[in-house]
Length: 227
Image 1 (cartoon, helix red, strand yellow):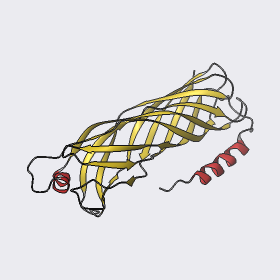
Image 2 (cartoon, rainbow, N blue to C red; image 1 turned 30 degrees about the horizontal axis):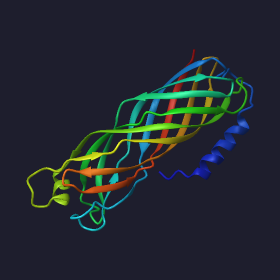
Image 3 (spheres, rainbow, N blue to C red; image 1 turned 45 degrees about the vertical axis):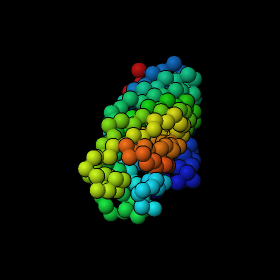
Image 4 (cartoon, rainbow, N blue to C red; image 1 turned 30 degrees about the vertical axis):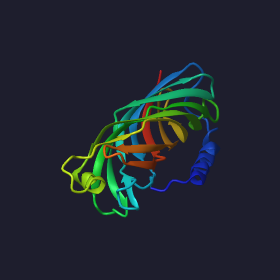
């Protein structure tokens, strides 16, 4: 799915045009909200080569995953809020790419990317539709990295010692754009697109390394309640 920044801005502009429609009560100063939904995390991979003795052009790709998410927020003012998410780890498959495209699954990794946002919500608290933007830190934590026999064959051909690997954790940042729709005084739903800048390095037990630009896009659909 190719999501461009310009397209997100157009969506935000359309939503902003609806933001001043009279309707149910949205988030206002001092209010706590909780929402549950699903987050589809889609890495936009640009892979470096695995270092020698792997063949030149030995690259990797990373699959998508979707997990449930719980999101809590607190409104500092009628327009400014802070938000954080809790969820289960995302499970990503790693595939061969570049010179080894088509070799299949090389391994698996789980990722937990907790993120906090400071948000600005457009329009008044009484608006039915409220578009919002946000920005904040993300800590990308990788765990349970597991290689396959294909990874061993590519990184250490002829060996019967399985290749293991480790991905560096990274502190980075994310930006979000979304819109909330209020059903009544308490219930609402929203849709959010999040873009994260994420570059990291992979370290193999064979001594080889690989640079990975992941820069994932997340799409979150959730239903919430205002306390």
